[in-house]
Image (tube, rainbow, N blue to C red; front, side, top):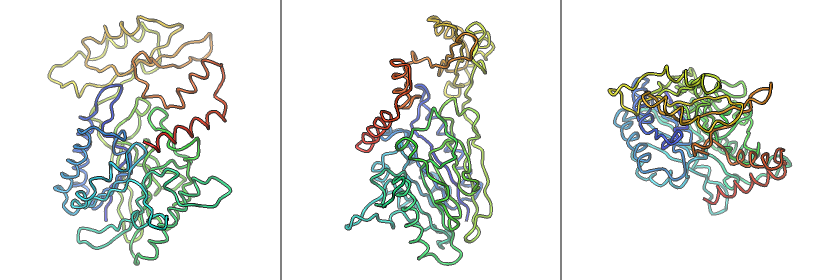
Amino acid sequence: MKILHTSDWHLGHSLKGFDRHFEHHCFLDWLLGQIRLQDIDVLLVTGDIFDNANPSAASQKQLYRFLQAAREAAPHLRVVLIAGNHDSPGRLEAPSPLLDLFETTVIGQTWRNADGEIDLDALIVPLHDRNNVRRAWCLAVPFLRPGDLPRVETDGDSYAAGVEALYQQALQKVLLNRTAGEAILAMGHCHLDGGAVSQESERRIVVGGLESMSAAMFDQHIAYAALGHLHLPQSVGGRDWVRYSGSPLPMSFSELDYPHQVVCIELGGEQVISIQSLLVPRAVDLLRVPPKPAPLLEALKALESLPITDLTIPEERWPYLEVRLLFDAPEPGARAAIESVLADKQVRLAGIDVSYQRGSGSGHHTSDLALGDLSQLQPEDVLQRHYKSQYGADVPAELLQAFQTLLLDTEVSE
């Protein structure tokens, strides 16, 4: 059985105001080609299907058209999708009765039975091959909020203990039902200890550092753990089979050099016999000019060397540009000068990144928030910046914890 693991599509995402529908269209077309080329049996999508909990009609159509096309390209294909922290669990699950017809299982949240216990059966998906023979089981666990977890008595981190307990309970249920030769897979949308984070793109998903789980919760019975949330493709905890596939597109300029990919896994009985990374071709480039922050005149000279507009190339294919500046003091005319140089250039200005030189020390970084885009900042970052500007110090730990708790309560109630 061959499985394709992908994650963090963020359909509907915009980069500094530029819609990325075209890039997602290119990715999904390429993914369809890989499903055929690699002869895939199962597609696992591990959360953050959409960029926000209220996705546009266009991004929803993009998802459903892909699922329809995937079914036509590979009639035997099974698809399992879980919700991420950006997704609305209810909205994602709403079309499930129709998606079942396409052998597509969607799991947005945990459900409880009449006794108040979590319905584990709803999180367990048997995986069949093209001959309808069961070959594996999948623990399809979506992004978990505190209210989604089983009640666990512990003296330590109750959130982490609850997550680990949920996986263990589901695993034990599968172990009682599987037959010899059937593999067990796990899906999750979470942050494991040791995972490298893209600071500009990945929303902190619980409170403080409590979202960090141990890779050890995926024990030797799990053949492969397919994870979502972190955008950099990586294995975690020294376990090659515990993996983030990463996002297929760079969600910010900080992800410019990520090897965006999907992961192809081949099972042989209960074990993984191969893991292969398939690099996603980049439909639109991201440019940082100059490569390092530089004074305005030096930056303008570098911008002048950019290609002149070629009217035969549609604008949706033009690279996104971030201009990197180093100032001694604010220069109000910088943006106008940059726009003037770029007037005949084949790029889309998606950001001005400013650093300030303080004496002989290192540059002090800031952002050109005159662009009107605060989406690159996390709520905690806004609080930290405001507090430091007012009081010249970092936010006290107690105040930050209270703010994060309030933020979580707001997200849960949406």
